[in-house]
Amino acid sequence: MDIAGSTALVTGANRGIGRRFVEQLLERGAEKVYAAVRRPESVGDLDPRITPLYLDLLDEKSISEAAEAARDVTLLVNNAGISTGARLLGDGLDMVRQDLETHLFGTLRVIRAFAPALAANGGGAIVNVLSVLSWVATPEGSGSYSVAKAAEWGMTNGVRVELAGQKILVQGVHLAAADTDMMAGRDVPKADPADVARAALDGVQAGALEVLVDDASRFVKSALAGDPARMYSRSSGD
Ligand SMILES: NC(=O)c1ccc[n+]([C@@H]2O[C@H](COP(=O)([O-])OP(=O)(O)OC[C@H]3O[C@@H](n4cnc5c(N)ncnc54)[C@H](OP(=O)(O)O)[C@@H]3O)[C@@H](O)[C@H]2O)c1
Figure 1: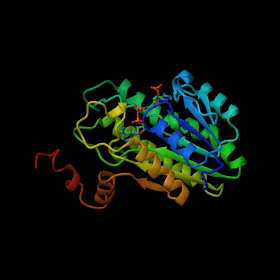
Figure 2: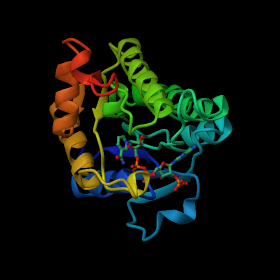
Figure 3: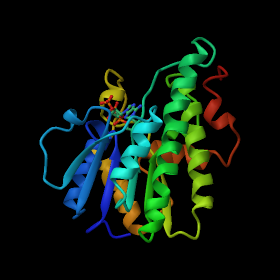
């Protein structure tokens, strides 16, 4: 897909990886970028090609109103997300539900609302920002986040199949860590969020179904084909 001349919508566009997506899209010649956010005033300095839109993944009405206002979208970037940090056994199920409501149901709501417009516009692309934790649970990570990202990965594949034939590329982007508010205070190697956006958009231009941003994602993906002990030996005390 050609990003030059496209009309894109990025969720969670006010900070972190989402903000970098907006910058990269403009650099690559997108004609218009809807910055879909919970607080439109947080979008900041406005390039005339940016249109802020109110969209909350947990508010179905805001999503249908955004889809009504942005019927010209050809590239949808589902980036918005949270990390409650909840453990599956030690924390309340309400927190686990919150992760799932946001990453799985929230993102799916957005895709359901925008897919008809993409199809009507002759096709395009949907980018879902997933995680290495879609594929592995770690003692340092949150089990709840991992479940939500695994579900979002499955949803990404399912939507891809359902949209086959409508010329819509559905891409999953996996990364371990990027230097954003979500990872503040975590002492691990972090990618520049601009590089995450760059890799994903390179993938869109190349028609890639999947983008693995870092070595950790590449390692975990390859390890899935082997004995799980390769990834979980640490957790079992070996
Ligand atoms: N950073 C990492 O290391 C990392 C690793 C793997 C995957 N990811 C994924 O990358 C994506 C972006 O993460 P990030 O690191 O850029 O996070 P971030 O800096 O914490 O930004 C999160 C963004 O999502 C928005 N958001 C949260 N809940 C929302 C909701 N209910 N409705 C609409 N917008 C909502 C936030 O809006 P407000 O400003 O209104 O809060 C913010 O714009 C997420 O899907 C995350 O799971 C991140």
